[in-house]
Length: 255
Length: 259
Ligand SMILES: Nc1ncnc2c1ncn2[C@@H]1O[C@H](COP(=O)(O)OP(=O)(O)OP(=O)(O)O)[C@@H](O)[C@H]1O
Ligand SMILES: [Mg+2]
Image 1 (cartoon, each protein chain N blue to C red):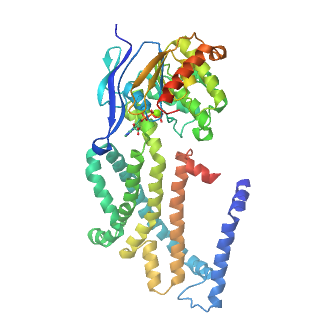
Image 2: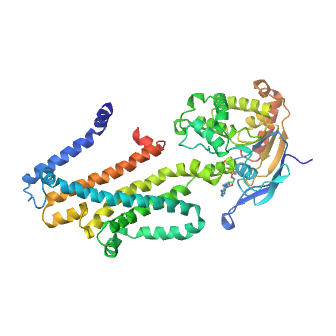
């Protein structure tokens, strides 16, 4: 049987001639429905590039991306995507920005008010629903952007360092909340991150990418029970996973 | 009232400067023995100007009509062409470089030609105002509609929203701040265009008035005309600035200044 998402020999080269930058691949990745996969790699290895190609927002140089046997040839609209730089618009409040996602998709705002309140509460932004993005800190903006990306309940979620700008404590909390959400709704998640610990805590599988041009160094299946709470994070097995990943990147001289 | 006090408190240095400036002007005339046909004192300008008030007010109306009409036409054409050029790659390669190169020529140099083609009436003045206002508006509009961030472009693509919806929800509001840069610049140009057009050929309006009274050795009246011209210019600029505050209150650069 074919996999839910199949990335086959996918490669991206930007520019041409002297300005050519080989950004990613070729790489092959298969992802099952409902799986949580993290993509881990050094800065500039092509993680964002990979994500954009999977979302159909960037043409590949060669290779293909398939969702349920259908080749992606244009922007995929049945996904939730969060970019590395947030997509909040300065002329709308936090609530307005979340509603923008719904409006653009032609969904009924009234049906979602309750949900907006809940998701804002879950990231501790309920007091800031009517504030504008420039009145928020960088971390708060990122949390608002997270809500914006998730509000329409996507079955496929692509996140590019969604927690990058957050402080350690908030980060921990959102990880836990996100894990809970994933356990309940079982969306398929591709999660780009710089944090090894975060990848191990959240994922079924971690994909390690080599320095640019990013190829797959190896995939590590994380065999730990969910929910992965503090206790599991303190376990020997967890530490073992973290250490083994650290060793791989140590080998490349990136840590 | 509270606002007014706050305004005085924050602007007292400027007010002091203006008061000092006019006092210096007033008293340096007798002090340095400057003849009144060279430079009249402020009090004389007020006195003589108010005797000619009817004419000044009427001419202000004439010039205001030319300016506002030309400005509005330029606004509609400028934003229209700006959007068209931003969304059409053919226009971007033809009309856009054409506009950029015309921008380099001083538009006001066409004024005598337009007067000779279209006569002394309202139309040539309006055309000249349109000409001086159109280019800053259209060039800023093109810049505005082309500078949407990469992330926002990808974001709306991933929602599958129609182009029309995207335009009104994202592209238009995102473009407004840069558009207003052009609107404001054009607002400053507008009265200049109308005045020069009137200098060159007209039988009414503030530009006409100033050139006639200057010829009659009446700098006091010329200054009165300049005063009304300044008020007209400030009113138009003030209106555009007010519209900016109403339409894009979220605009950060403005918020910083307000703080
Ligand atoms: N639009 C583009 N044009 C040219 N080169 C690009 C473009 N986008 C990315 N690149 C190049 O491709 C390479 C990979 O970029 P990418 O953003 O995918 O890295 P990344 O793994 O996401 O890095 P980071 O962890 O820092 O976000 C980089 O060397 C970058 O310079
Ligand atoms: Mg990146």
